[in-house]
Length: 421
Image 1 (cartoon, helix red, strand yellow):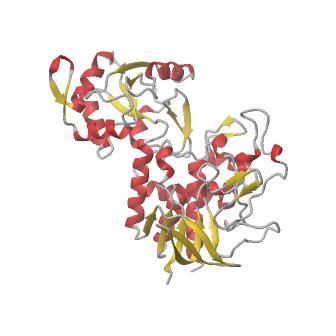
Image 2 (tube, helix red, strand yellow):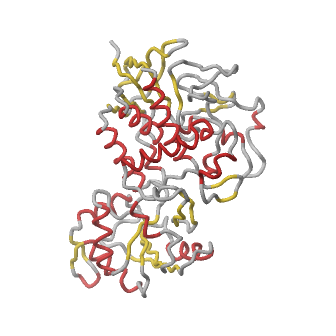
Image 3 (spheres, rainbow, N blue to C red):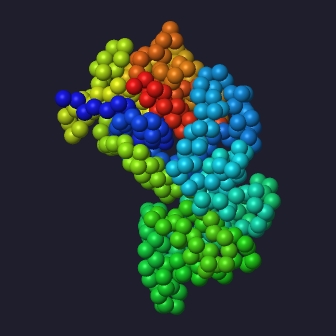
């Protein structure tokens, strides 16, 4: 007997979570299944809606959506669909940026300034639009963040403040290959660590003591995003008090603590909405023709049937393996939906590294209800909708639109699925 639900969401990233939360809030019995852990830990934790169009930075994403191609996912869900998705996101998280349509400018660990629509509360005091001078602090054992170099790059970007950088030893003398969670948990627990001179101090106080000689009047201090996992607000508050300056986090590359925190919050929201979740269970096959009747899920080598009235495909793009390629072509592996592609493989790429590569827009081609279509433009299945990076028609790395597309199409797919019940 199949495990049944109203809506089955396949994929546990931002699109799948958005679809599942939206459908559950509409009253559907929702189950989310995913093969791997959420890809959010590989993301910065920032929510980009639209940062660039034709290579030019975008101040107001909503003003520029009309300039996007007709097959762009934003043109399908419309401006209202994007706004509704962001409203849902704002409701279930503590992110900032909802007070304005305009992109915020958030400094990154590489010293660039990134336009983004929503950002963690921990990054708020570090915005590049703030004219207070900033000190960036790196750790000797965390080589991914060179604070003096990042400060130089940020100043060179033309920000309205002076930036300086300093590198200190992290209290507790962590190893060079320590995971970011080790830094975070040491600050969460705030247990005593040995400091210079052999004294023992709580970790937060010890860190403030090591940074204080470098403060030199700076009104805000930026650290790599490792300031706590369970109690990041408490860690920042203690450091702010100890330094007499606002403290913020600079988003880092993967693995990303802000991404992990965001995943935790969204899974909590999913649980609060009453949806079921299973991870580590890949969908390996399906049954049905015009409608998908059931999918087969691999559970420890056994193929278990899962049946639903509606399905949402949110398995990711080329990186997430929601779209696969080999020398024969490009395919969507779960339902074998069509992925439009140039017949000649040499047309997938441009010669220039940062050229307009066709492969960047590979994905299924949806109709107006986000159902993947065949060569004639008809839905592949009546009851399957796609969301997020598995959709084609957009170049999310170049546009900085990945999170926004995932939220907007995920929510829309979840709502449309419940309307069919």
